[in-house]
Image (cartoon, rainbow, N blue to C red; front, side, top):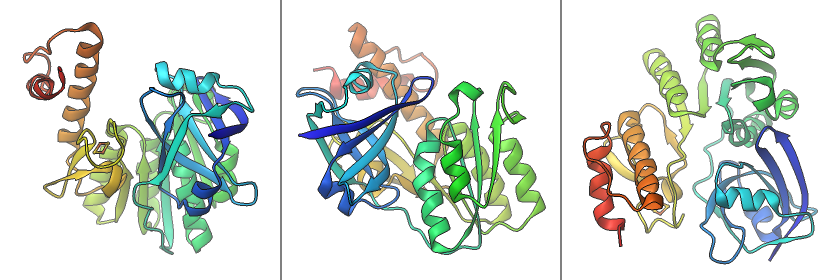
Length: 292
Ligand code: FES
């Protein structure tokens, strides 16, 4: 059992939990995640390991309370134990000294980029952080990003804090003004796709982290398959980090939509509609495997 030693509300609907997990803390590397199951019988939630403290034997993860299982996780009090945590899972991020590195993230992606930004900084790169959120209330980890980045830029869509607009607006400006050797992007599919289209043209190496639906987190169920470089990859064991220029974002969006529709159908006991959006036929196909 994994005892909760600290919990914190970071921003609207976003919580951080520190939990005793000595072995995971010792082995975890930036970019890896854990599969968390709050109580026996619950679904597993894949969550990035944001921090580790080997002296206390703890790991920290951050999550958005948006469903039944994350809601249950968020309601567990300090000293309570989590039923199971499996990890570290996934491939560690490929960190090396790279000169000027832009780490851009939006929403909960900021929690995922923090250990990456820290690792590039520790390795000797000059890290420029760009973080964005819908509003000030939804922004998180700004001070932690300020500590590990040489420079930080913040954007809010409603203009309630710092620059009004999208993180990609700032990104496009910076990338045209100075030399950048590597870009790391984590956030919405639209943001990662926009970043990659700019860097592909400029031939700047770009990594992204993909967060497809994961069920077993072990490479066996196939729910997390993503198309990269023309091949299907399992994000849970071959990712979540991928070369952004090789990711088929169109296929990724379609698959994500199909699984969301499937989830909706499953909860309402309905058949997917093949006419619905472009993902309909894929949802209908996957339904054939999952309906029983
Ligand atoms: Fe099942 Fe990756 S989550 S194969």
